[in-house]
Amino acid sequence: MAFHPQTIIEPFRIKMVEPITATQPADREAALREAHYNLFQIPAEKVLIDLLTDSGTGAMSTEQWSGMLRGDESYAGSRSFYKLEAAVKDITGFHHIIPTHQGRAAERILFSTICRPGDVIPSNTHFDTTRANIEAAGAEARDLAIAEAHHPAVIHPFKGNMDVDLLQQTIAEVGAEHIPVCMLTITNNSGGGQPVSMENVRAVSAICHAHNIPLFIDACRFAENAWFIKQREPGYADHTPLEIARELFRLADGCTMSAKKDGMANIGGFLAMQQDEWAARCQNLLILTEGFTTYGGLAGYDMEAIAVGLYEALHEDYLRYRIRTVAYLGDKLIAAGIPIVQPTGGHAVYLDAGALLPHIPSAQYPAQALCVELYRLAGVRAVEIGSVMFGRPRADGSEDAAPLELVRLTFPRRVYTQSHVDYLTEALLYLGAHTATIRGLRITWQAPALRHFTAHFAPLGVEAAIG
Ligand SMILES: *Cc1c(COP(=O)(O)O)cnc(C)c1O
Image 1 (cartoon, rainbow, N blue to C red):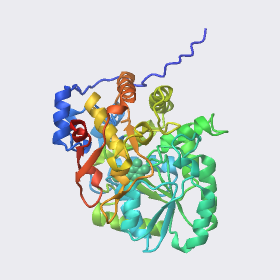
Image 2: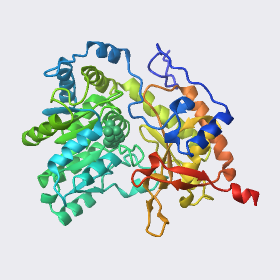
Image 3: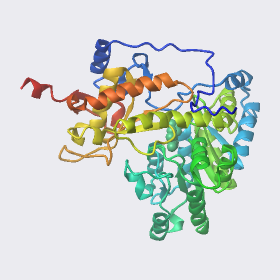
Image 4: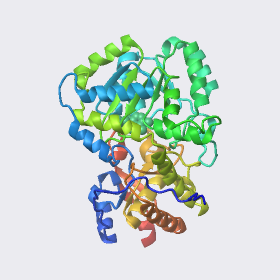
């Protein structure tokens, strides 16, 4: 007999629990009103299933917690730093390992060290903090994703790839001397958590190196990307995720990392690179703004948790469960005809609110309306990735819409079980069958930058209903 189970189980058991309590519809209605229909303003205690982000929200393992107790809090030369350094060197092969308090600190230190005004930094798609830090350094962040990335319903195994022709055109247009570094985000977070193939990394690396341009990886979800390569790219089925990650990093010259993602930690990050002179300058800046070179703004116990977490993120059982969880939800939604970004990516399902709510124009924020409705109905918190986040006000008071109106359902690592996902599916199928009654919103107050965090909204359509 050979037992080949179809059910992919959570590869852990639970030894500490945090109760979550369902709120009543009236409580949620009141919470929405108090929060001005902005889910960032709702206290987490009033959320039943929180899918706002996978950043720092994961559950740590027994090994990570025991590492926390072994943390060495020495200011200089902490044992925990050497453990982190050894882990990052083992996985990436990079020579200089610079700890930071999170990913954006690594970005700020890198770009303010190497960018000059007028420089251009190409990427498949820059994450928003990456873009903001490049722009703060006076340079231009340019996205060069393949054409397929712009179409939610188009299936492509490596929809996170960079368009190598566009990269070559960019180098010819601006000149290699104005491109201090090229980035690749794996997986492509802003593009739907879509992976980048080894073949694409190899091609980008060859072009960059032919022009003496260093290639840096935004490595936040390097383990999830390695899993997709193993599953989808010819020649990699027999390689372990660790072997794939090693091969990928060795095509690059450095990386930035948020350990709140595939570091499996609640806080932390690092910058790693080969170049000695850049590293020395980055370390000077680190001492000025983050901390000494062997802690960089982290506690010793944080570095222990990351050193262990980087390997746990590469375990096959974990990755199989992680990616299957996202695909499990995606498959059910596709079967029910609910439009999502396809294929499902590594850390989230992205609902296509523009397609689901065609009666709500982008000026009335269909993705925000869907987030509000999902919370109202089921106590689930998702995040809007549409015209609230990316719309740009024009001088006449109207707005340029975002290219897509998406709602991201982001899965914290090792936190929720299959029954949580089943409950979520039920809620989404119910919503999908009752879209006609969902109304748009208008903004009644907004901050001058990053308005999505604090904007106030008011529901539309009540006046119309009253007549
Ligand atoms: C989260 C993230 C960052 C920034 O990291 P923080 O730890 O939030 O500062 C950068 N790039 C990508 C792709 C990310 O997902």
